[in-house]
Length: 249
Image (cartoon, rainbow, N blue to C red; front, top):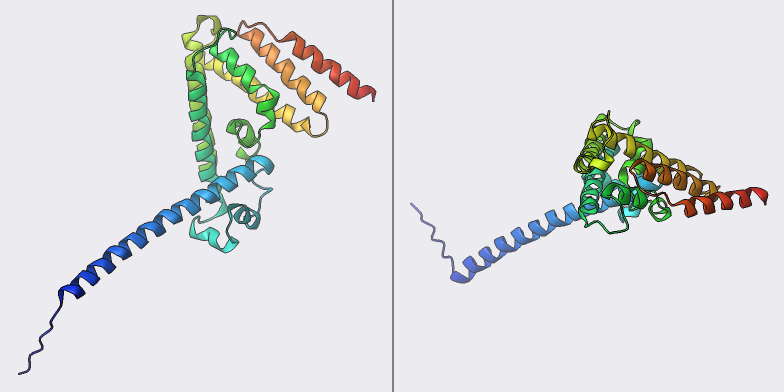
């Protein structure tokens, strides 16, 4: 009978332990990097979808914007629809977080109510022109009805949460309530006008800035009157004058 004796030195044991620890660190970094790469793709998709819509963005362009090759896309997402669903959900969550922060700010003396302040901010030229950082509800609305069920669900849930937040403002302010409407119904009516005006203004902005400004000014002033706030008459008049001048040239 033969017997084999294996002698393991303390140095060999230490080396093996070091290698094992090092592999775990490398694996950990790899997972973190994978998560960062995935987020880069989501961020790039969000920017491009806001600018040109879901159908106007191909995977090759999308991955190039994110800093990767197209072949790497399927390491992170099963399909473009899967990415769109995640972008939609993430964008709506972010939009509601911004809305919560905005509504929670102390009310300045020159604003009659938090809803009035929201109207002025939302229907402003700066918000309209900032496609990348503005309201996801308005930016993604044109694509929502053509998206997958999962993406539509993400959009609907986000919109529903936004309406709940706005309804809470109406409920807390007697001046905003309407006799025959619940706070939520009132919030829906006001918010629908805000989103619609923003979308219409953007639709003509590239070809007729005066008309685009006229739309948001008229909608803003009408909504301010609806929440018992003095309309910004001077702004509306200037926008109309600008439009008349542009027609005469």
